[in-house]
Amino acid sequence: MQTSTVLNVLLAVAVVGAFVVRRLRWQPVTTTEVWGTPLILLLIGAVQLRHATGIDGVDLALVTAGTLISLAAGALTGRLTRLRRADGVLYQRIGGAGLAVWVGAFLARAALSVVGYATGTTVTSGGPAMLMSVGANLLAVTLVLTARSGPAHRTGTEWGRDS
Image (cartoon, rainbow, N blue to C red; front, side, top):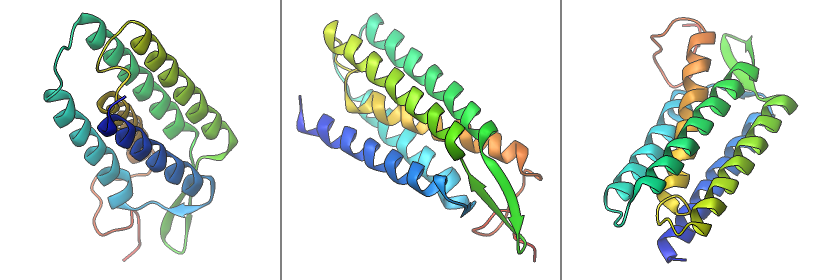
């Protein structure tokens, strides 16, 4: 396994771990976290995927499957996320059901990586696919939270802060 793959996997695990731990507690919904993190991960994964060599149909099928699973799990997590307002600020918490969805998505993504590795694909079992999956998952959560939390146009660093 290449060093860049190991670093990508560690980065993805660290981001997901920090994200889940934070989201198990009530946290203010911040613009930077909900939009910045998924877009950065998707961008890094896409750039790395663009420079990957030896991509074949199996790679594309497994990356697509992983992305679709991640989007579906993210949408469900976004739906299960609890929202509340306190002192004019919108707060979120994923709770136990949301955590179960995250674990299920992680296991599904790990299974796709094993299949990819077993079939000799170069992308599915690597870091770019992992970063794209995590980014897609977080983006789906963001889109659902945006739809659930009220007006689509938000300003400032905290959503829903009363001015």
